[in-house]
Length: 288
Image 1 (cartoon, rainbow, N blue to C red):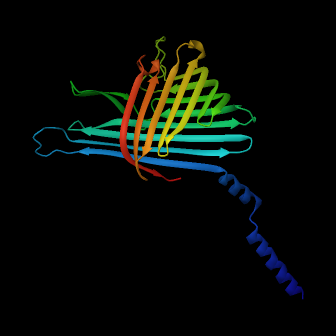
Image 2 (cartoon, rainbow, N blue to C red):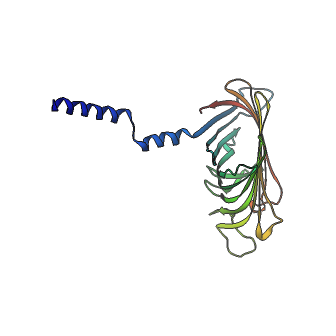
Image 3 (cartoon, rainbow, N blue to C red):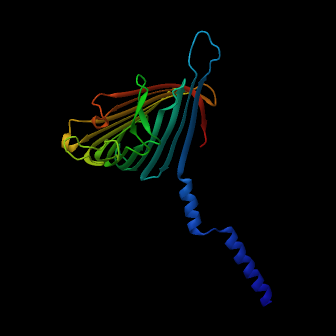
């Protein structure tokens, strides 16, 4: 009888151990399920080739690969949003060799504490840089000047403040921030007022970031991000970055993308507003 009871006890113990996972495993599963992930990749390719073409022209090849993702944990009292945008593209025109046309690493993390009102405190961190060397070309002399390299320059910003969402499509935040610029070889962090060449610059200031996402049509989306930073020691000099995109899905995998970027940063070698515009037709695939 004792052997039977012992066998039954062992059977119940084993069954319980198999059917009831540890509490920490349950917590880990629940925690993982709170994350909502999206991941969209894009590839655009343009190719033109001429053979005995009497009207003239040059062979051309261009491509751009992009990754746009977001991971969000939305809880009752907090919202933690992480986004990452990566892009790299090159073009070859005739015999000039491959030249970079797009290069972007942009990471952002924003933690918002929900007060149950329209205004909520937040803490954020952003990182911006690039994958590869950049050059300025002079076709008249057939020369090039290296102006940047992988992870040079790097821009980091940490901020705390308050966020406001007046509409479902519009989010804006304003806070005190610390902005760091790191550049080993190209002077993006240099202070022209000093004789030495600085490789890093740290500035405190005011940060403003506004995100807009509007669905124009069922298959057309407009997104815009406006970032501004004004240092305390030179409050009237505002660093401005704006990224605006209209994307339209032609079919399940084919998308048309029109993008305009604006940058106004005197520390990037020019006081004028830099403008980059691109129109592309390519493939898009949503993994998550």
